[in-house]
Structures are given as C-alpha cells and as structure tokens.
Length: 208
Ligand SMILES: Cc1cc2nc3c(=O)[nH]c(=O)nc-3n(C[C@H](O)[C@H](O)[C@H](O)COP(=O)(O)O)c2cc1C
Image (cartoon, rainbow, N blue to C red):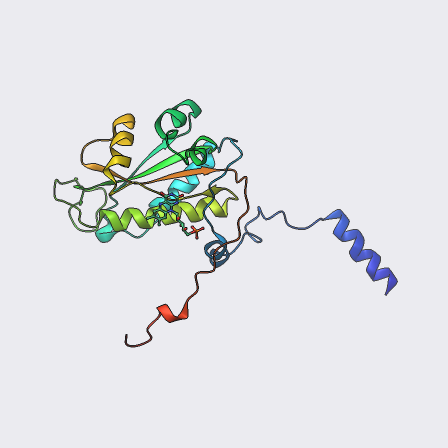
C-alpha cells in the first residue's frame, strides 16, 4: 500500500500532468461555450499571428447562408494604430490594452453564384443574410479566442453609424462593406465569472 502510494507520488512528480495544450486534455466545445465571458481588460501583451489566424479560421468556419461567406475582417495589431483608430471614448482601455483588434465586416452585396460555390464570381446582388452570417463568425471568434486562453469582447458597430463611420474611414473599408462589430483580443488581465443566463422560462416546449 505504502509502496504503491510512493510510486504514484513519484509518477505525479515526474509527469506533472496535462498543461492543457495537448489535444487530449483540451477543454470540450461545451466547456468553452459555457465558460466564455466578455473580457474588457488586457495585459497589453501581443497576440501571435498564428493564434490570430486560428481565431480567424474559426470565424470563417461559421455557418453561412447559401455558403455565401460575406464576412471580411480587418485585423489591427499595431499599437499606435489601435490607439489612433479605437482609442477615443470612455471605454477605450479595452482596445488600447488588447493585443489585436478584429473588425468583423460584412460584404453586403456579395451573394455568390452559383449556389454553394464560394469561389464563384461575386455579384452585386444584395446579401440579405450578411448580418446573420457575420454574427455567427463573430461568435466563433469569441469562442476560439477563449479556447486559446485569450480574452475578447464583442463591441457594437452596425447599425450605429457614429461608431462605424470613423472606423470605416480610418481603415479604408469600402462603401459596401459594413463593420458589424469590433472585437479586441488579448491576454486577459481579469477573470470574471461567466454569467449564468440559463432561464428555463425562456423556452417553450412544443408550443408557445
Ligand atoms: C450585439 C452586441 C453588442 C455588444 N456591444 C458591446 C459594447 O459596445 N461594449 C461592450 O463592452 N460590450 C458589448 N457587448 C458585450 C455584452 O455586453 C456582453 O456579451 C453581455 O453583457 C453578456 O456578457 P458575457 O459576454 O460576459 O456573457 C455586446 C454584445 C453583443 C452581442
């Protein structure tokens, strides 16, 4: 009994267990969804380009009406540029301390043809689903950032013209591309508990 205890102790010391970076001990998708929370304070450390690409890949993995993929992203990592574009206003600290700011945009006229061929020619036809598609991409971005141990928060762009016009102008975003939301991403400097939003009364089983 004593011997096996020491063997286990020795094994624990030699192999101190998972650091949650390997695939086997990565949190499940449900864990990531249930523990995500908005992060508005960051350490100021940069976010590696590789991590940003993983996050954007998650964004582009979102469902999208007729496989239209109207999302476009502007990623700003330059500290001075972040400060000049996003640094005004009372809550600018969440941008200026972030490692990157992702502007999730929608190409409002890019419904692609023919159906289901995302590499087909873009048309001028309005894509009435851009808003939904880009929202799904934004949520995937928040979840991917959290899964990587980073923090992020959705901040509103569209439809608030006073918010999106200066950003679109500063970043050279074309006229038919609309900034839906602005997501600062960074190393969290806070650890708020996820809000419990479970309200069974909001569900109507079978019939309202
Ligand atoms: C459409 C939308 C707009 C939001 N706009 C802002 C915003 O402008 N500033 C901000 O700090 N948080 C913003 N949030 C984040 C919400 O405040 C946050 O998601 C909500 O309080 C729930 O908290 P949680 O994300 O931690 O679960 C927005 C979220 C959504 C979905």
